[in-house]
Image (cartoon, rainbow, N blue to C red; front, side):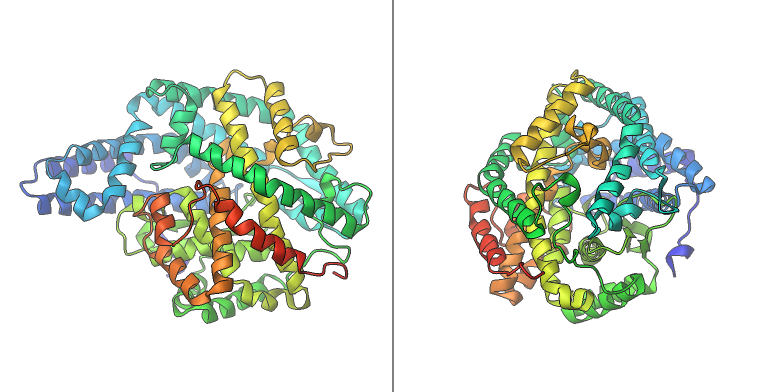
Length: 564
């Protein structure tokens, strides 16, 4: 069955609610643990089916945000998803209060119960209205981003479509297309600020209703951070500031010299080499064919996985009008199928997406034997280890895509990981400020973001961009709007992925075994539990960052970039 044949129909909430209430009643009336376990498995099938319908709608709407049918369906899910959550809440309460809890924990695992306990803390019927409002505001943000129609050289582009021009070898073109890109945010500044202001207020209201002191506390529980807290995260940010910011700053200075520039402006940052950045030497079909070869040679498991993705049409890769920006991987429960979405634009990012999102997809494909929807994916920071780790694990096949520019790509990829981490922790630091100071004005928020840039990204030079100098770069960071506190996850995972880079250099077989181990366990372990399973050093442990930054700096220093 192809993806186009996966059946979508609007769920009948009333019928679903009655069915679930009956199942919950059967579960509460169960005479034995085994009897209760069987009912729980039935309930999880119902939850999987609702997930499937919601996910199919979300995928098809993101592929074409102008599709009237899925636009209406998306509105349905914005309104009804909190009501479905309310029904699920009743089931979760029954599980937590089960008289057979010990037997259930043995069957489904300790992590499942921790996740349910968190779920019960961050939702109740009292906040349905707030959840609905938040969903609608997030959808409004996504539509606003997707609405960009930027005219350049007689063509019209969305934000993703401008990507190749923004890293052109022609500096004037880089400057102009970055200006046009930025102009969209200038024109919509008030809309972004008003939207975000409403989001902050509704989130704080929700947290207070649920008994939290502030939205920061809510955010950590909502992100299922069961084994670390904000103080541990602050210690990780400190390590980044101490060990990574100086190396990243050095890399930017070397880039400026390599490009022969007096000043490295913001529109130069993503342009690495005078001869141009490494690009895939072919179109989407070329990338897909070489991706198939790469995954067939990597392992028998990845070969089976990627063949399935291609044969079932589970990849939508190319950018097109009205397509939502960005890239993601999701999972369609009823069909045991991952799905990869991206916006190819002819840059090296196309390969990063192929490996990054395939890392997510391979993980969930490897753990699809788990029949509990809540445990298909691990928590977010754990998920990103699979994706970022896969980016480095596939390095031996980069010549398929980049040919004579392979070393150029590897340099950019590895140095890019180091440059990204300070930005990633900046976004996290900013989000703590936002929700610790919910009454801050838009101007105060922007000023604080700019101040954090000066601490974590001291190289930043915004030239003549008034909006960016005011501190409004964050408008384009969708996570801040749609997934509060989801960003430190990328940096924690990046540190773990860089450990995989080191492992694969030292003992490839051991590295692959460790990677497979963390894929197979799905979401059955907490973040630190998964880190232990993969034989990794915890990012919160003093010395973790120091243990890899030296190897990376040495590797980059040994690459002669003068003739690239």
